[in-house]
Length: 286
Ligand SMILES: Cc1cc2nc3c(=O)[nH]c(=O)nc-3n(C[C@H](O)[C@H](O)[C@H](O)COP(=O)(O)OP(=O)(O)OC[C@H]3O[C@@H](n4cnc5c(N)ncnc54)[C@H](O)[C@@H]3O)c2cc1C
Image 1 (spheres, protein in one colour):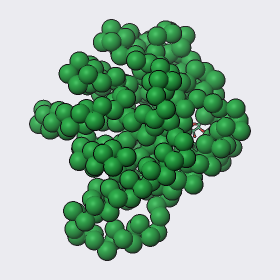
Image 2 (image 1 turned 90 degrees about the horizontal axis):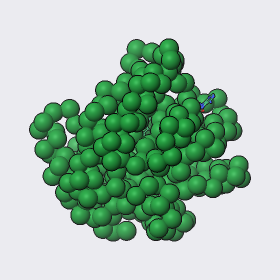
Image 3 (image 1 turned 90 degrees about the vertical axis):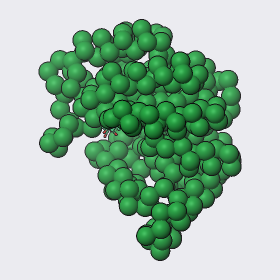
Image 4 (image 1 turned 45 degrees about the horizontal axis):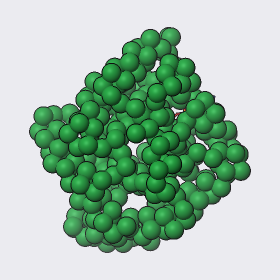
């Protein structure tokens, strides 16, 4: 099923994002978690594309597993990093041959050691160019694009970032999946701003359940995400108790998702971090 069909067939769609593990033991562990996650029948599952294009084949292989072994629709993430146009097209052909119908089209972060993103010779500079390339290559793909309720770190301001998001939508994006956030008001303001720019494709909030305070602090610092002070102090009070952190994190995510669902979002995209328990509890509660 393509993204546009997913969102037109049901008003509320759960999707789950995984990443390709680096070891065979990691693959096996992920398969067990996938079994539990797929049992909740998410509308689709997506698999990330490693930094610097390090998972070209593994992303496709995992998407095939999602579809063939777990019977869920897959979306393969794909970035411009380190590839020429020709290489990008040949990956698209491989994805198509593997039966993948949805691509999450991203620019990607600058490769390690580079402060600013610079396109390689013969490569692309921005995600809107990748969306154009995918659309011009084949009409068969559903295309997801990234949105940033609190602004992309490199953008000088929100207005510029929104105009750049609009380029991706106009180039042919079918749905926007957002960066993780913990303050729903940021998402709702972002959605209003998108709507006033005439963006009418589904805007799906990205939610990362907190299961480990130290890890989430590192991640939020990296993407510049606002972290509510009261939640931080609750977690700080149990910083040596992982079980208590997990419980607080899951309760917070359930409430956050309920409020978003009540605000009419077309779905929730969970950053599962290759684990199942937190997502299972949240989805069951929803
Ligand atoms: C849901 C989601 C999934 C992700 N999955 C992955 C993944 O699998 N692998 C991975 O490596 N990374 C992933 N990322 C991270 C992403 O690659 C980074 O956030 C990256 O820095 C920006 O990618 P983008 O597609 O948003 O880029 P762009 O949309 O190209 O935006 C990048 C910056 O350039 C600006 N800009 C955009 N277009 C133009 C233009 N035409 N002219 C001038 N400025 C412009 C934007 O305002 C922004 O500041 C994901 C992010 C999200 C939200």
